[in-house]
Image (tube, rainbow, N blue to C red; front, side):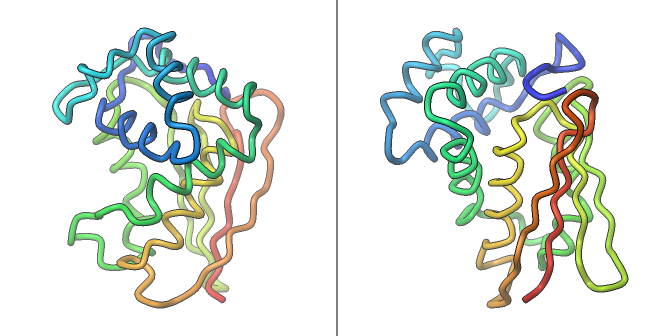
Length: 178
């Protein structure tokens, strides 16, 4: 369910939170205020540390309430549009096929899943069953689909399909080559 971790003890790699804060480009002070308010000490945001997922979700929920879903989407896009991906991912398709595994390399506990399916028409469907905001997920998929190293000069469109208001499935994103 959006903004609620299914596992109250689940954690997220602190470096991911730090990368998200860096994606606040337009309003970095807001990100810092949210971190402090939700007891996510900036000194703890080191690559080897993990922090409670629910605290981070609470901060994202407040962010979305303050600035709106479109800003949360932009933050999601900014995180990964120019991110460095390990060389093992030599294409967009390769990354999406491993997306759930990558997600669990950065999380501990039960935090849902990404279910990725390649369609006969060449599109990739990403079903999001995570507690992260829907628009944040939309932005992440858009950013990944624009990452120059993964796209190798190809262009992709991302179509957003909202999931039900309740339950684990928050949204589905369909990535299509243009």
